[in-house]
Length: 390
Ligand SMILES: *Cc1c(COP(=O)(O)O)cnc(C)c1O
Image (cartoon, rainbow, N blue to C red; front, side):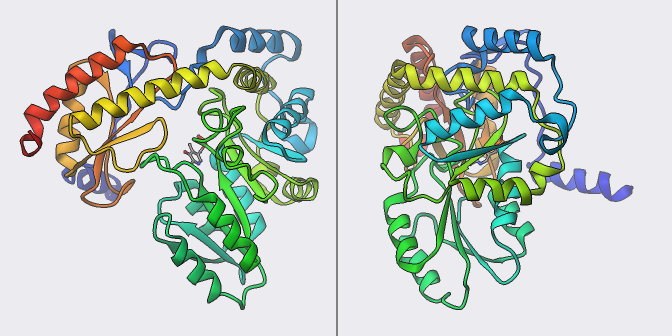
């Protein structure tokens, strides 16, 4: 087993070693770590629903009625009323005929992609797609092409040269998780139609954040009829756990019969589904949650630009600050931590070399005071770490 300690040593030497923090409080705008309180600017819990009283109430009621565990896979005896109710709720939310819920978004992606295409087919990805999409593509055994980030012309070129494939699948994040920008969905859908390819989107960071009713980027662009396969997670703005795919009834029945990460794993505890149902209702019925989120995003971006930070091409509550060098990014993140602010440094291999960054996420519940404190510390960062900017 010496290779294990050798490899760990190597990771440490290259400055890429990862450690876990231990959070001793519920998820909110502030987190307690080792007895100290930190301002949280790295949560995907955009709307604060992970700790919402109505969500907690729904969980308690569900536990009273159904107990905790689901006891078996969905296809054996684990398929309970709340799984079905959640799938119905997601279908209405997404404007699709049917939906299937997986234990996580990661499992939804690997199970779905590897069921839709296989050896002899083609799957095409944006360069910055999430790791779970990449893993699904590899697992599928299909030929796998990548186009430069959001480069529609290159996507079209790949498709034009791929007429020999009878099955072609384009997969893209709708909101890119490290840059915070949006995929050009209307163009992707248009090209897919022209070249007879299927479109699958990952709404992990879009759901609850974009669209009039919070349905996601697909709703924002009014494309729900034209996107064949809408995937997403219940673990981000929905504040719960689980992954889903929405589409027409045939697609969903097909996945129920084909997706191994659905078939060969235990169903989610029913109370987890109750939390997701309650949270989706809150998202649909409370546009004010989204309004305060977007007010915070706009305010922060404006101020960051005045401070001359490069927020790359962010169009969402994911706001990166480009640093470049990996070690410097870690040093800045450590400095922020000392000042009581949580913002992780994102380094290769998660992002390309020399594009290490701080990755901030904003929540609806951040107060103006929280944002002012962040900006105050970031202006110190400017002076201490980035003399070239001042
Ligand atoms: C977080 C994320 C996933 C995985 O979802 P989980 O439910 O956390 O497993 C998939 N795709 C994207 C784009 C994500 O950001």
